Every structure is written in structure tokens, then in C-alpha cells.
Length: 229
Image 1: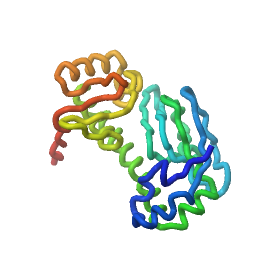
Image 2: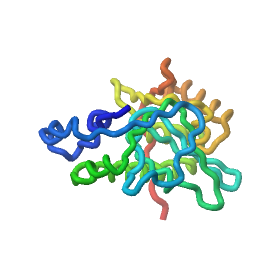
Image 3: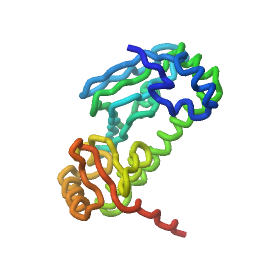
Image 4: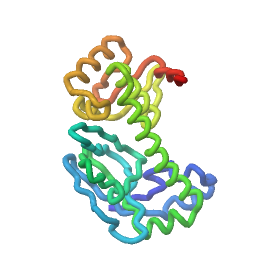
């Protein structure tokens, strides 16, 4: 299966003039790797020289890292770029990948990379995606240190809302089917504690689950604390 990249991920064309984007619409096609839910063992080395990695078109991945018995997780969703052979764990930790929902990955092989890198606008958009993921990782790390599990979950969900949510009236919808187990990994807490905190947030009307297993946020995002001197 192949995908037209500018149709599958219109954000790649963010820096192109509209007429240029329309002209290129059918010219950049990538093979698609489909993954079923469960563990995923990605390649440990680049399949070929000039391979840029994989662009996540749909679905959800979790990358779990274990250091000295403690676990942390990274949620990957639509628009993220991964290069698994550069993400192998260092000597003192273990890492694994889990497909949470069926995933479609665009393969950015040498042929596709040649098209993308020939246009500075497309290249810049690809760099943006990598930097957005790095920024997200930094926010995830800071979130795990927020005091109070209720607030920690709220910070996490507002972060997810800014990346993948959309506003509907006076609330924000996050169309991610996140289990309590996955959330516990993302906030560094035990699953029963996460379940209790989610019940408290639901009772307060701040965070509720939709019938389609997405989430609804109401109110305003947490305000950042002032930096200490």
C-alpha cells in the first residue's frame, strides 16, 4: 500500500504556497507499513542510506523506557517522526515499543527523502515535526514532577489537547483512546491511583470520557507556576 504524503499529512505543506502544494499533491508517494496492536520490534539499523525514518499517519504507539526499575512512556500519534535505530536504549536502560491502536507508518526511504529534501519548505516542515516531538518529550518529563496526581493528569491532557485535540463549543475533545494503564505510564503513577484521580476529575466535571473512548476537557488549562529564584 502507498500513501500520498501531502494528502495523508497536509501539515507537511505548511510552508508551501497554496498553488505549489496543489501542484505537488500527487507527486510524493510513500510505501506504508501497517502494524497491528501488540509489541513491535522495529529495525535496529537503517534499512538503507538516506532513510529518514517513519512518519506516523494514524494510530497510536507507546515507547516504554525502564531505568533502574522505574518506567516512563512516550505517546506517539499522528504526525510524529521516528527513527528507531537512533532510539535504542543506552546501556543502563531497556526500551520497547507497543502498538496501542492499529498504526500506519509512511516509510521515508531514500526515494521519498529525495523528494522531501529537494524542497526546502518540505524539509523545514519535517524538521518542525522532529522538534515538536523533542519539545513534547521535555514537557512529558516535567509533567512527571508535577505535585498531585489530579493536577499531573490535567497537565498531561492539556498537553495532548494542544497536540492532537480540537475545540467543540466550550470544551476540548481529545480523540485518543487512552487506557488507565497507558496513562499510568505517562504520568509515572500506579494504575489504581490513576483510576481514582480520573474519577475525581470526572466528578468535578473537568475531565470526562466520551462514549468513543476519547476525552473531553473543560475549563482553562493549568497556569504555569512562577519560576523560583
